[in-house]
Length: 477
Image (cartoon, rainbow, N blue to C red):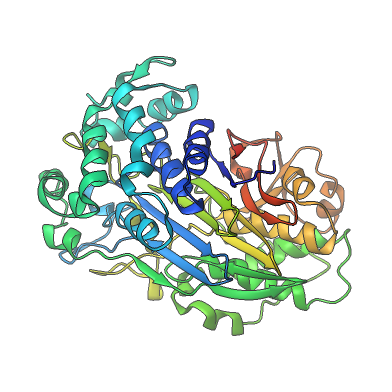
């Protein structure tokens, strides 16, 4: 879809509509990103929320890149990290990241950008079947976290759900900025709930939080420059895979999928070392171009929601929001109407081992691809599947010369725990099986294959494109 003022794609039609509205009333891509993300925090709390994180890559009209890392640290008093419950919570980073995105790149006020989300929180939205299913699947965790009486947890499919506490929190942030979350009553409510359940987070952990803004990691892939998120994310694993693929000679369409699978698994060997950032690009990824190694590596995590936006001035942003697992830690803060993330579950071993004040390696890995005046922001949910999905799309664009829409539409695979999930009807199934891959056919459109959102600028102006998988939606103004 091509627009005049701008374009936006997101994980839900209501979020896309909020982004479109920002563009229509004179806002830019940054305003659209904030508005769409905030709506997702209201209507998709299983995937994201104010208790979670946000990462974004920004490419402005002048060609300058920036990586916004809205993730928080483990509490300074933490003695042991957990994958669930109060000691799985790191400082939420999304609210501070909104303030930074608005102040440095936005055209409208934070009040204007958060208005659609505030309206939905106050006046309600109709509970979706997917959200109801997520509640049902996490019922035990939600009850342990104190969310038994949460309106989201009690509502039926199609019921209008109003969240006055969340609406008040969003209003306070709109009026007073990020300090309304990281200080005062909101911060006290978070710390109190965590303390009651045995958590270690203190007021000083919240008040000390700052958003990190740095240069992205860049690699050349075919005719494009590809930007990925720097540490503490695992975006460098995509950069490693693209760089290695770019260096291979005579890659034909028949072996492309096999090579990408092998590169993915080779790159994920380095996951715990993602804190090295661009230095990892010096590591050689050794693969067998003939046979499957079955070394495994990528894990089975899912979740997350993507938003991408672009505007007439060339500002292009790719972003992801997340609370990690469904509803994060499921620790519920009644006064704020939110659950908190369980991002400390991302700690592993080595340099990614849990320690006070540290940030775990983060799964969120948006990307921006550019060549001259043309640029495309793309992102997908799927945790460790994010790197794999984007590698497949970029490989099809460069190695097979496919159109972006066709590359997003095409059947996918996902390496997971030594097996290879593959959408039924994938044209490479027989060849991959001959090469020794352990195939696990899955119905097309399964959520494990991601849900790509794209927005960018081409010769015809700003455009947006979204996956047919899940509930993605594109809009223009």
